[in-house]
Length: 174
Image (tube, rainbow, N blue to C red):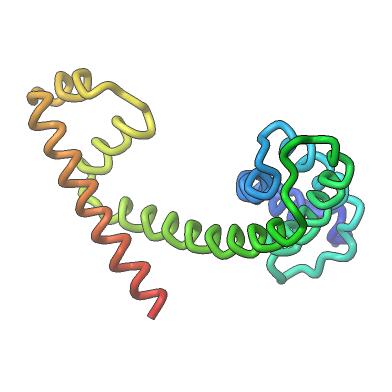
């Protein structure tokens, strides 16, 4: 088996955490353009330090720690900027964002499980409206329903999903 640094597993872990890592960096930087630059620098450092990652541990936490130091480095380089967070604020934001992201990931998984449990016709309605971004008029027309009844159906499905997600997250938090 090739070393971890060359494995497909590292590529999968790195790819899967890009969105969360970018969101984390944006929160710490307060600027999306600067965050993209820091994300690129973070990815380079992650590749360089791949041998220090221990397979089986939390890849996202490891990547966030490296990103945190890249944010600090970028801040040092950008002290000319009018808006610069102090180090203590960045540290507090770092902790808060990581805690918040874990909750978001838990709710995302719960939502996916709840969607999977919906009757097929409800899943299709959710898919058309939110994944396919189909206009309500077109959905109603395809279903042979009024826009109002389609809107009410979507409302009821969303309400059921909200209740399901709340119940699932309450189970995991207790």
